[in-house]
Length: 206
Ligand SMILES: Nc1ncnc2c1ncn2[C@@H]1O[C@H](COP(=O)(O)OP(=O)(O)O)[C@@H](O)[C@H]1O
Ligand SMILES: O=c1ccn([C@@H]2O[C@H](COP(=O)(O)O)[C@@H](O)[C@H]2O)c(=O)[nH]1
Image (cartoon, rainbow, N blue to C red; front, top):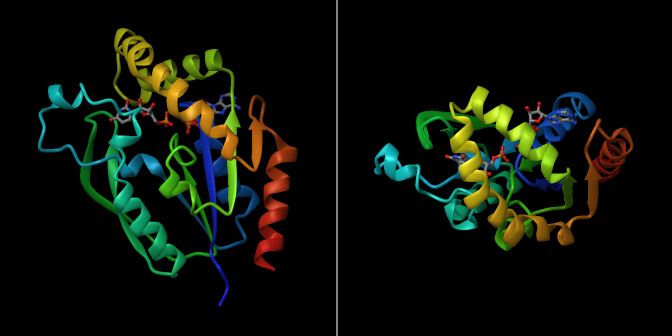
């Protein structure tokens, strides 16, 4: 039986993880059996808390992730079993009541800030990628994205960035680059790195 290949894509907030994962899954590897999963859907379920209480949670600390659910799901995918994942809502900081079902596939791409920082997740990676984007670019992208897509104010983005995002990045996420097989400097896109990953996957699948 063929082994499922798991690609982990890490990097700071707004570094371009989702963009790279999406390109790999939907363009470069579109003829292969590929599933792209976001680690964002594995934040713990804090729905019993009020919205104001949830706003105080530090979502940049690894403890905010439901590692047990994620490891169970990755184990199921390695066994070619389907998984059902709750969809997360960044506007309310809570899981929605909707689920997405992922069918078994030969390649699984998991992207998220903690994919290389959390040992129990990192150990699943066959190919470990870190997207390295300068901090100021990431902050600008995050500010735009959070205000447009996540219902945040400029003040809340700046406050969260200075009190949680940056200190946790400096403590946990930035240093996880040491576990990467490939570091991708993603500014205007990096075709060579993306082609290298595609070639490696093709060789693993053949
Ligand atoms: N190479 C790039 N150049 C310019 N903008 C980019 C680039 N990559 C991503 N973005 C933009 O930055 C924001 C964050 O990208 P995303 O891929 O969602 O990052 P992440 O998943 O790391 O948080 C998005 O609005 C996206 O369109
Ligand atoms: O309820 C939440 C959950 C997470 N966040 C922030 O999201 C980023 C991680 O997502 P990226 O797409 O990689 O940026 C993390 O830095 C958290 O601060 C949130 O704001 N609210």
